[in-house]
Amino acid sequence: LFLVSLSSAFVPGKIGSKTFSSHLNMVKQTPHGGSLVDLMLKTEEEQEAAKSKCAKEIQLTARQLCDVELIMNGGFSPLDGFMDEATYKHVVENMELPDSELIFGLPVVFDTNDEELVPGDIALLKDGDRDIATIEFTDKYIPDKALECLKCYGTSAIEHPGALMVATERGKYYMGGKVVGLNLPIRDFVCRTPAEVRETLPEDADVVAFQCRNPIHRAHYELFTRALDADNVGEDGIVLVHPTCGPTQADDIPGAVRYKT
Image 1 (tube, one colour):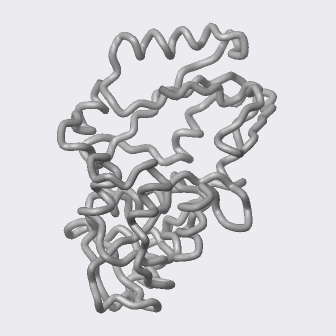
Image 2 (cartoon, rainbow, N blue to C red; image 1 turned 180 degrees about the vertical axis):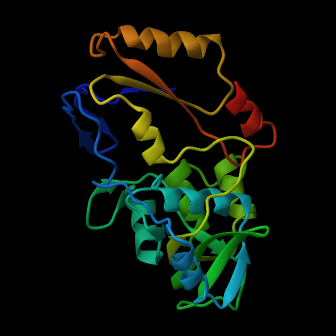
C-alpha cells in the first residue's frame, strides 16, 4: 500500500541507494523528468500524414496496448517511446534512465517474434480496427530475460508472475521505437490521462494519493481517510484514489470490477 502527500514536505529517505527529499510547499509536484509528455496528434490532417508513412501494421497485445497508451499520454514520462537496447540495459542494471539518474523501476519494451521487422521500419499500431499510434523502430535486440527478471523482480524463477510473463508471453526480440499517438484505446471504464487527473487536483491543498490493484474494501477506506489526519496534511486535504488496471494474474479480479468499486 502506497500513501503519499503530493504537496507536503516528505521526510528525506532512501530507495535502494537513491536518496530522496522533497519540499513542495503547497504546489503540485513536477512531473517525473520535469515535464509531462503528450504525444497525441491533435488534428485529422496530422494523423493522416503520420499514417501515410507506415508500411506495416501491427496488432497490439493487451500489454503492448497498455504500454503504448501510457507512453502516448505521459503516464511513462519522460519516455517518448519504447526503450532501445542501451536504455533497456541501463534500467535493468541500475533502476534509472541513462545520463539522468532519474529513477525508472522497470524497462518499457516492445516485444516481437517477427523476423521481418527491422530498424527503420515505420508501423501502424492497431487495436482491432482502431488506429492507436505509429512507431518508428530504432533498433532490434535479443534481451537477457533471465537477468532482466533477476534484477527487476528479484528472481528468475517462473513461479513469479512477472518472470513467467517475461519468459512465456514476451517475444524473442525487443525493439526500441519512437511513438506518435493517434487515438487512445476504448475501454470498459474511463481512463483519465495524467494531465486530466492533474486538472482535477486543487492548486492549494494537500493530496493523499492511494494506489491499489484490488477492489477497495473497508480497511483501504480507513487507511486513506485517516491519512487525512496526518500531521503533514492540511485541514482541506483531499484523497486521490488511483487504481491500477491492466493485464492481471489468472486469479486476480478483473480491472472493470476494481474500477466499479
